[in-house]
Figure 1: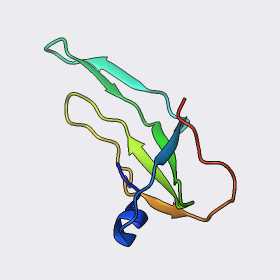
Figure 2 (figure 1 turned 90 degrees about the vertical axis):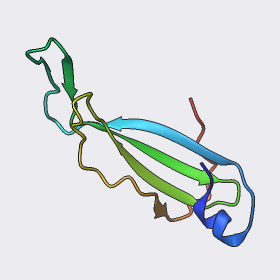
Figure 3 (figure 1 turned 90 degrees about the horizontal axis):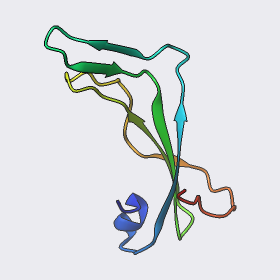
Figure 4 (figure 1 turned 135 degrees about the vertical axis):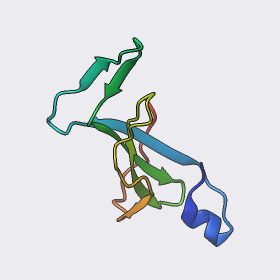
Amino acid sequence: MKCPKCVREGRRSNFFFSTYVTSSGWTTQQYYDPDGVLHHHDESHEERAYRCGHGHQFLQSIPHSCVCGWKQEVDESLRPLPVSGGPPPRSV
């Protein structure tokens, strides 16, 4: 993964990120289908905050999915965030 703004500007940079899980408030639906396959439909999703070495910041939502093809409808694109002036997020 590269900072999309740096790529457009022809610059190179480190791209730091932090991840956290948001909860929709719904119970996770897990069940076994008639073939004994476990299905896990989790309405929560990950949020990743990115910041490059040049101060560009983005937020990305990452949906959960299941073996059956179910996928939570979430916009996975990187969305720009205003520059806060703080340190870049760190990966844990």
